[in-house]
Structures are given as C-alpha cells and as structure tokens.
Image (cartoon, rainbow, N blue to C red):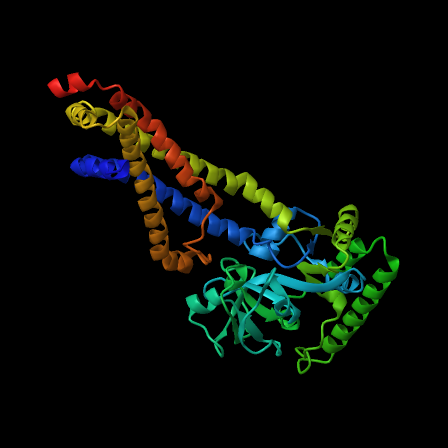
Length: 449
C-alpha cells in the first residue's frame, strides 16, 4: 500500500475535520478565480489593443478624456474640430483612412449615445482581427441608423423600428422632431459599439439645432487657421456664401423660410477623427503623432497608451490588492490545515507506532503526513478552481446582460498557472512540522501509550 493510499484512508477517518480544512482552501481559490475572471473581462474590454486605428485626433486637451470619449463613450467630448480639418487629414499621404465621429445627442429611450459617422466606420475592423457583423443594410438615407446589440436588446428595437433623440443629454436637452429608423443591427462586439446608435453623418448635420451660430463658427475658424491664411480664406468664402443664401431665404418669406439646403463644409464640425496610417511604414503614425503634439490646431493620441496607463494605475493595483487579500485567506487556510494535522498527531501516536513496528521507516511515515497535507491543499485548490470557473459559467449570462462585457468564464489567467505550485509549496510548509513529529515518534513509547 503506497503513501497516498494510506494518507487518503487517514483523511477519511477524520473526514469532518479534513473536509472543513479543505473547504477553506477551496473557498479561497474559488474567490481568486472569480476575481481573475472578472478583472480579465474588464481588462480585455478596455485594452483589446483598444481599436483597430493607429491614432485618434481631437481638439487640444486631455489625452485620456479623448480616448474615453471617442472609444468608450464614458466621458463627454473635449470640443469639436472643423470638418475642413478632416478633409485636410484625408489628403495627407500617410493617412490610409480618416473616419469622423460627431457626438452630441442621446436616444430618448435608454439614453444611448448618438454618433454621426460614415459607412467607412463599419468597413474597418473595430479591433485588430475583428470585423463588424451587421444584420441589415447600409446607412443611405439622412435618417437611417445602425444600432448596437445592447441598444437593440434593452430597447426591444429591430430593423424598421423608429425612435427620437434628445439634444444635449437626457436631463437638460430637448427632444428633436425627427424620427429615425433602424436599418441594421450590429452583432455583439464586447465594446462600446454595442451601446451606441450610429447616424448618417450628413443626417447628423441636417438635424435642427446641430449647426452653431455663424459668428461663432467664423471666430473658431479664424482661431483654428490663424497660421494658415490660404485655408482660412477658403473657409471664410464658404461662410460668406452660406450667409448670403440664408439672407436670401429669410427675405423670401415664410414659404421658403424652412427650405433645407446642404450645409457647407465650413459650417460642419466633428468631435474626433479615427486615423489609420500605412502599415508598410510604421513610422508614419509616430511622425504624425509628433507633428500634432507640437502643433496648435489639434492633438493625436495612440489609444493604447493612455488606457494602459489607466489600467496599470487603477485596475492593475485593484487586481493586485484583491489577489493579495485572497492569498492571505489561502495562507490562513493553510494554517488551519497545519493545526488540524498537528493536533491529530497526539491521537495517532499509537497508529504511527504500529506502522513502524510493521516495518514502515521513518521517511515513510514522514511522507504519509506530507501526502495528507498535499491532498488537502491541492485537492481543496482543485475543487475551488472548478467551483470558481463553474460559478463564472453560471453567472456569465447575467453579468453579460448587465455589464455588456464579453466574459469567457473558462479563460485561464496567467496568475492561475502559479496557483497549484504555490499550493504544493504551502502543503510542504504546513505539513513539515507534523511530519517531523511523526518522524521522531519513538516506537516503544507510542505502543505503550
């Protein structure tokens, strides 16, 4: 009969005490697994190489706010950029794709953010290696929209549904008269796109109240293109033509007062621009980033850098704190195993003496005690690992529904790879002293006791 078999029989004799000590280890490991699964889902949602764009261009301000606004839609936008600047970037030889985003409204139902953009947004990957899956048609009409998976699920919308939007936010804004129609629904992406409604960019500009006063636009263009008189002249020329057309329509009477005409580019603005540069020349993005950092008009940010900094400073420290706390719980459980085995040694002196009398060596007895502590630690850890992932599997649908995170309950965190070697080490540590007690047991004294 080998040492493991004898150790199992010994644990069965003390099944209540053994079960409770193993349960302590199992609960600690289960908590650790749940923490790692949840933090892994959050970390994946916020990192995932952010988006499949090299740069995000926006007004001068905080880089993190620009990324949280443009990518994750959890911060208000900094300000707007002239639409003319979008055309300027598109003409840059280093830029392969420049996709505009225009923010400002929310849906009446659910207060989901509204973004005006172009079909090119859906033709690009939303994260490296992942393309949009869309059920429906492209955005064509001015009031056509594509909605994210969570928007469709929570509001009960589908292709053909119509809705209204609120300008300036759900609390302080006013309801627009236009009724928008859903022409397509996105498949789940696990990103902020699931909680977003996308409008035709031209339709976004056509909504009443989205155009700023002419004087304000003119002032901002003068400030923006102060060092570029040629582009400023082109912009001001469009502004003057627009003012003239407005004056003509205003003087034509009520029959023509609300006649819609196309908004000139000089009157349009975008909140952020998603940039993809040439892949065969990786220094293009760094060069453009550097130019915009030193310039006065706008700024560019690599979306990975500020998010990684945020994760390292906040989420990473929180994860380490939780793991350290749970490690202490597991260590205390190990102390419980030590106390359980050590206290049982006085009751097992005669049993050990009989084994020694039947020919078992000191090292054999020593190994049996270590095997017991190892079975308790590793067995409890294995049960906790299975229970932790099993609980994650059960709760994943509920968590996905309420958080929008794509949770893989069987994803193994790198920290878990160290779990069982640590448990084996803990078993050796807590079992050593009781094993030494068994090793030093005197056969004659044990049999006469």
